[in-house]
Length: 493
Image (cartoon, rainbow, N blue to C red; front, side, top):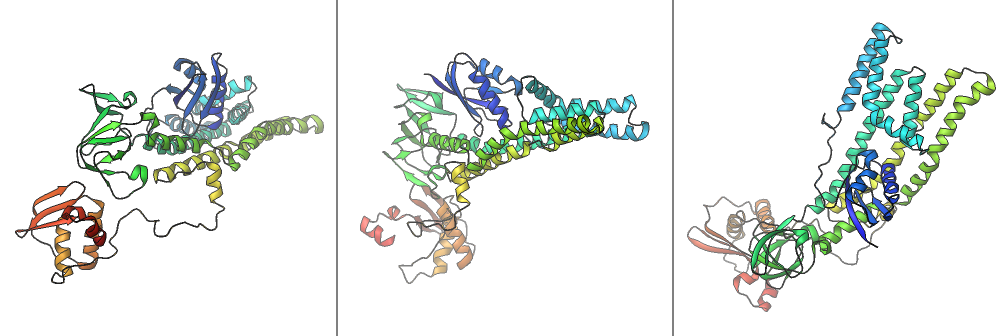
């Protein structure tokens, strides 16, 4: 059975994602479908075109693509994305002003409130009515009935306010969800989309998805490595923090392994591709994060079950409040219909339903950006119950920031001030993380005085730096830079 995964733009709520999933399952050529709401993806088993998928998501104007496309998170402060809220609020204010000047029953007053409801609640009303006709009861159905009922009984102000508040809540939800999804986007953007490839002695630029195992990829200094592979030519230091969490760049030379998404800092490299882009270590990390965000915690599962029963229950209660007192007790029909509509508005569970998944997706995404992979919502929730954590090693938990712990001078004729002045002068010109640690230590504890400019400065890949200070040559770097034997290096280390 064929299985394809597609990226989906526009999913703003869990109920909409479920509706989209069901619509896709209704396609004759589709055997099964599964929506990953947190990652904004759908996996389809069977045969379905992008046009068919977009038609299935037409109720929310969903956009479907086979390739990942960068989608910037929506901003709360842009008029373009939330113009309907601004326009609806303006019409509401005009209506309130006219209400004071002309009265509630005046046609112009009513028109202003009607315009506020129409502009701010068009999508809500159209979706809610369509769901009602299909006997599909969700939060939008509840809100649509409440707004229409408010208009029927002449409560224009209440109807317009409900529409605006619901529109604002949806904008906040979309913003929160987009911010959560940006964590996956940031992981995807670690690796470049294109790379220079040598294939059959011909140099070409290819999309990363078209690179094959056995190709040779050319990586220049300052570029990110696009695929997992083995270095066949060149040497350089590689910043692997995004993949391995190592704070210090790692020196790589021939026959060393490199990973997609890591940064080539200094040298020219040629890398033989060992894995396809979709099988790289970075791709596996992205997949883990996506699956973790989609895995529901016990609290979220409870909320989903609760909402499934709660929505129709609220509608039954509202119907009872609106009809039982007038029919059986002879009370005012208009008063109790209003009370029933109030129950619908107050009882809408949208905030309750959206809160848990957004919180979990955001937490897992935030952890991923900081190098921590959490397997799912259930494990995230379990962390809240932990009282004690035991680690199997000591001294291995750090902030990922190198610092100088101690130093030793082997030549007693050299003072610490003399040593650190020259080390400081050289390392201020280096971008290596260890260089920063040395300059910070020298500045805090030795207070080196400024020296004349360093001349003939040179950075030696994987070893250290060298330069002339006051006509004398100085070197600072790893033990291998000074040609020490392995036994001597062990003593120095």
